[in-house]
Image (cartoon, rainbow, N blue to C red; front, side):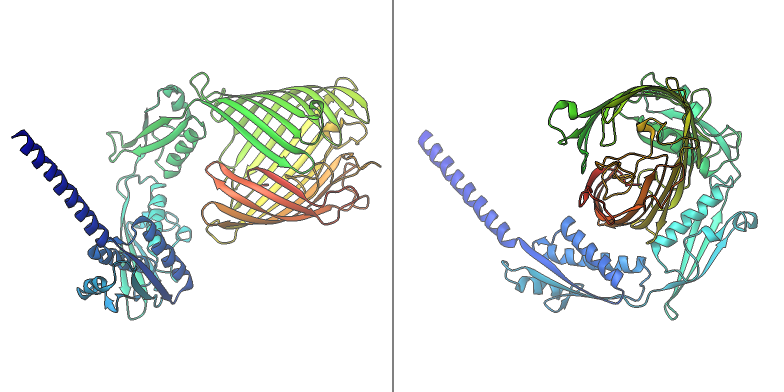
Length: 619
């Protein structure tokens, strides 16, 4: 009996194995693959978009499986292409999708797929004619006159208007713009519905928005949740409005910006209530996700002549529970340019910031550093301490003021000068650029002024510098940008002879005139060592082009020089000019850049090119 049972079990195992083999063979036999041959006539830009759409579908939902799966995949692609065309304003587009000359919408298409050998790819042919682009002929906005009439609603700020394409993205964006304007006038619960009438005879679209403003609302209490590390009583101080103020969307945005700028949260989610409270106010709930308080990081940069630099830092973003930040950093530079450790430059820095000190939007700062700098123009050992205030007046204006102390030894030609300086650094920033990291439009002006008193030589002097940058969004979407920079600096009442060498102006390098080594675009001595000057002038123009999602390319021309007198003397030295190209890799924290610059009017001792690797745009 036992022998028979064992025999039966062996037979069952063999039967099961055979069944699995058969099923696998059938599955392999039924695993077909397909491909789409896409031809688009009409709008070239739309053709590229449809090609990208089908390529993305091939990645996300590849054509494979049995015959029915292939057919359903092809039908999905036809549907997605039709939707894309209509959403862009092509309402008369023609799409012919076939397999084996059979339309994919008909049952005969399944037979055509079955007739294709299983080892061959099934070919789906898509012929698309975009047809004419429909345009908006009129835009109507209905609602209470005091809400939808000017100046309550400024139509010049809307994306959509007569003559624009009947693009679904534009229509939806315009709906959002209308609601934002209405909400900015206190109608927090405003809603809108859209009506789009398509006239196929004239290829025109009639767009109507009906606005329902709801009641006037006022800013209500803010309730914080989610954070376990930041004092919520302190966060209430960051709220940029008073409870009971007239509601505006801009105030909600300012609240988000105030919280995000602290740098202690990974996420800030603002949820206005869906109804007013008994006081006619709109409560706002803010959900916060804490960011890790401590961070450690490392960096690497390279510049021709100066060599490599490596740096590391440790940061605590929330030292005492009210977003106080402490950053310890160190850098070693001039690597590869000397033979012994004494040829290395280094720096150790401590930076502390206390936000909202005494007043909202006023930060107290403290900075201490010990440095050993090795340059062609001089070498410097120094210990510095700076205490200051950093105040944001509004979204466009910012000011800084402080007091600094410095003890330094500066050496040139083997002669060392000892300095004890007291300074009052001041800075005013007028910023209308749309980003601090990678601006694509707007402008920014920065004025720096620092008077110094020299406690050793009793020679006071001052350093003044004005720098302006501007950005032109050529393409409209931020992918093609023309950027310009101009800078002028002077030391009124001073000369290059009575000012410490490290405080003089120098030009040349990655943030100045690319193509020339750091500090070399200016007066030199008989051995081609930079001398620096009491004035400087610089200018740059750069074209930036995004390529794909993460890459970009730039072409630039830089010019500038330092000069011995307090005003540039072009008869002494013509501005140095450099030109070149670069690549960018865009990350969440800003672009990484690699630039190659070539000197146009180089002098004896200048390198044939300069290579610059760093984080962030050149300006």
